[in-house]
Image (cartoon, rainbow, N blue to C red):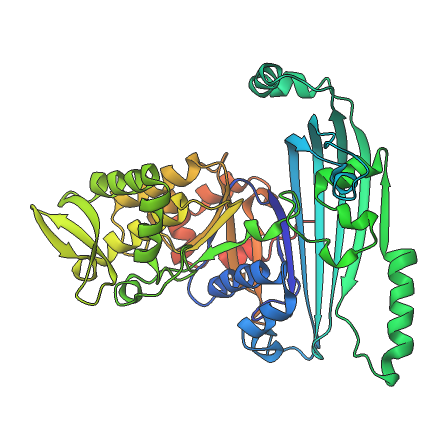
Length: 452
């Protein structure tokens, strides 16, 4: 899970910290506290962990994302992730190059089982006004490998009893540190700097400390480190594919109903909802059925949903009410918001975390209760902002993670996790309930709390 985020000089953030994140996180954010900027920060990170230059361009340039009240010329992000156990199994063909080169007649494939334990990943990203940027990755954990050509039935037993069997695989600590940055311009003025940078990368910026280093890097999908090709460090390994953590959405039903944008995967604003539902129907019809049945169960007037065609052969969504099919753009905003939320949850794409801005838009209590139940049942991490008193009053403060956003005296967005407030439940009672805290602006008291 993502456990901590630090942001400096991005929009309304200065030295902002979102800490002690859990599987289910609710962020109470009254108007003009920076909740939309927080959603934007997560959206920016989704691009930036893959391509920093593209992220900056997508958001309109450096000046459009920095805090306009600060003179600093650098934007900083820091994210910390933690995973307790990861099982990796499959066939690794480590001699494929020898086969291609004719040195081996048949590939020497071996069946293997690998276990990662207590994985800690830290990403630091610095973006400079002049367009340069620097990424630092720190990865620590334990790695163990068991490979003895296990027959398939033994692997099935292993999968069913993972917690017990994983303990039998001896693991060793490993640590990897890699940094890389934008290339300097290749002209005479920067040649010396470019040469110096390459020397630093070779000698200092890549550090690997692990037993069985080769197998570790193959398991991580970082074979290129062996070949000294550092630029693909943040490649396709599931463990290090951090953009899976930043699916941030902000839905406005009135815009969704008037849009016909394309794309198989749901956009951050939901404006390609119809195309995504058609893709789900074609690829994973059982998920389409889950979405459909969920919607029908909550919206009493609804009998069915279908994908049809309009007069110019575009896909359109039809909602069946009282045995009559109606285009989705004339249905209620609440129905569209619920449908889009369910689509984000059940679309066929790998997601480690979902982030929503105000899930309660246009929803009645029954729908709010249902979508909260759906989100809590998922394996991925959930973060959402809300202004809903109904949501907050129904939280289990012993299990659910509650965070308040507020503005400090300088106008910068701050966050405080109620886990860090001693005797928070007693302080809640002092103001009767969460509703009173919000209405009477007791957030000032909570924000001024000295955690030390």
